[in-house]
Every structure is written in C-alpha cells, then in structure tokens.
Image (cartoon, rainbow, N blue to C red; front, side, top):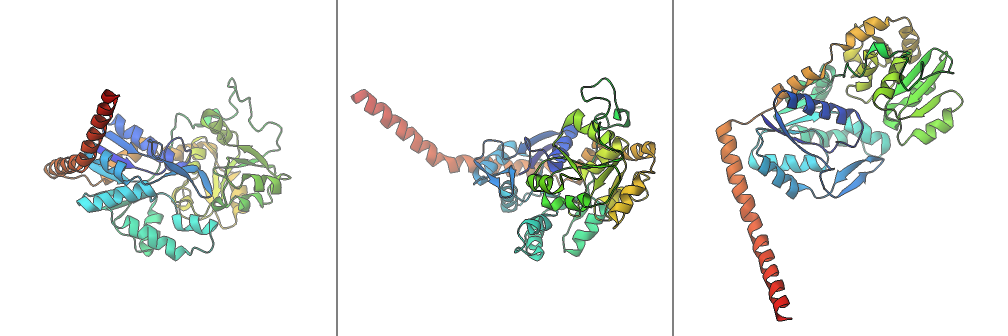
Length: 385
C-alpha cells in the first residue's frame, strides 16, 4: 500500500514515539509498502514546543499538507499526533470524506496537567477525545490502555504494541570486553546498580526513584528540562550521566542490575522491553504499560511499593528476562500496524485523488497567472532601460 504518515514527532527528535514510528516505517518498507512521511523537519516554519523545546511544531501547515497529501494519493492515512500537522491532516480527511486512523502514544492530558496545573484533566480529555474519535480506528499501546480510554468515551480502539531491536539490545552485552566502553560502564560505583533510563522530565516521576532507600547505587541515564534541578537536589545519592545512544545505551542497560520505571503517565514504555532484552529485570508501578508487560513474565515486578519491587528484581533470572523480550519484535509491530489501517477501495481512491489534483491545480491557477504577469512586466521594464 501507499501509506501517508502525518506526525508532529519525528527525527531528529529522540523519544519513544519517534522510535516507534521510524521502526514501523522501516519494517513496513521492508515488506514492500511505500511511505510518505509529513513531519515538522520537512521545510515547515517551526517554533519550539513550550516546556519541551526539543520538539518543533509546524506553523500554518495546512496548505502544504494538502498539497503533499493530494500529490501522493495514499491508499491509507495514519495521523500519529494531535499537533498542528495532525490537526491539518485530520481536517482535510474529514473535508474529503477520506478514512484515516490515529494513534494514542502519550497520556496528553496528564502531560499538560503536570506542567500547567490550572488546565484540568477533563479539558485535556475533551480535546484528545474529539481529535481521535473522528478516526476509523485509534491504535493504543496496550489492552489496559484500551480499557482505560473506553472509560473516557473513546471509540474504535485497538491495541498496537511496541517492539525492541534484539540485535542492538541483547544479554551478551553485559560486561562486554573489547568495545570502547570498558568492561563495566558503572566501574567505580557500588553494586547493585539501579538505573532509570529516559527523558528527565516532571511527568516521568523520576523523583519517586531518587527518593528510594536502596543499597548500592542509583543512576539516571537521559536528559531533559528537569535535569539541572534533579542533579542539584540528588547529587549526594545518585549519578547523572546524561543521554546515551546506540551501543553505549545498550551497555548502560546491560551492565545494570535493575532497571527502574517510575512513570505513571507513559502508555507503554519502550525502555522496559529494551532493558529486558539485555537481561536486566524491570521494577515499576502497577499502571498502564508496566502491568501489560511485566506481571507473569518472570522479567520484573510491579508494586505500589517501588522499593519492594526494586529489591525483588535482584533475585530474578536474567536469562528468563531476556527470553520474555523476544515476544516483542518490530516485524510484528509493523504487521499489526498495516492490519489496523483503514485503506480506501481503489476505485474510490482513484476518483478522489483525480478530483483533488484538478481542484489543487485550479486553486493555484490565479497565482500562476499573477506570477507570469509579474515576470513579463519585469522583462518589459528591462527592455525599456
């Protein structure tokens, strides 16, 4: 199929949403599907998202989104985010009667409320519910999120899980010798090592981890707007090493003894299965994301007493943990994504895009005529000089 993906979160950003979308596109293209991705980095004028400056949001994108949508003529449209690009694509699909799907990656109302307490959760859910319920299908990360969003009156929900790259994250990396990172990336720190990996931001609830009374050492891997404040406050009992990527990130997972996931707002938590893939068990709260991955897996523990969960993970088999991560592959994620799309029938699609291209050309005709007149006037003035 020809698939149009519209997303306000894309490269060069580095987060779970971008990893999910980019890996899904990569695996779908391997299977023969053709993608067009519309993202803020595609020449749009942008501004930083308040409180999250790494994310750039596009300004006034509707005309360019319309042009690219029409010229590509997709079989299926997927809108991944609720930002300006997603809003523009949604409005155009509704205008033309074009079916589309969306995905719900982040508890957006909780994210906003954590930063702006005066914005109630009810208002946030009214906004995202209105945005997503127009879709033919809403892809959400886990079965528990499906049930949760049903209580918020979302419709047409379907679970769409996440995957892990088992060639990048695997148990053989633990204390690996011969690479550039040394025999132990935590050399000099007292064991056991409890690590938190991810964006250092208020909604990630990292202070719940840093406040724990644990043996050994606590390490935070990542960067974000709360980094300076937390590093200053907890410098006495935690090590902050900044963001890590690629092979080095994999080593920080593998060489740890327990990965701690204190977030209560993530809808899945890619870092959970990345840690598991290296053999490192995961401790978390019994909330959406962790409760869909960890209980019964033999790869971690969830408990409202996070300290108890952390200490219990020290007795978990690393081999069993790594084995559980093999249930999450990007190939299956991509296959499920394609199966959940809402493609149009070919005759209807052909008629739609033929009419849309003709309308687009007609809309541009006055501007083209004006430009021709300007060029001719310019040439006339030059000849008279």
